[in-house]
Image (cartoon, rainbow, N blue to C red; front, side, top):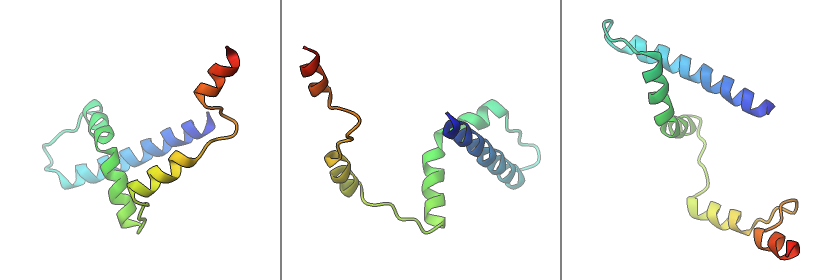
Length: 89
């Protein structure tokens, strides 16, 4: 629960800072309603993270590598659904 609160606070801070930057760059007569800005920020969050990652020099592993790695992992504390059903029956 604590990590969700931190994530929400971080998202709020980033959203407010970006809104300030956008407001600075836009013409003075343009208004950004809070609900519209929230929807815009949410819909562009993935692109924002991508741009931030590039700026910071982070290069994530390729999608294929991640799929291969994640598909092999079996979390020991979380049994596979088929195993759970078989032991329950």
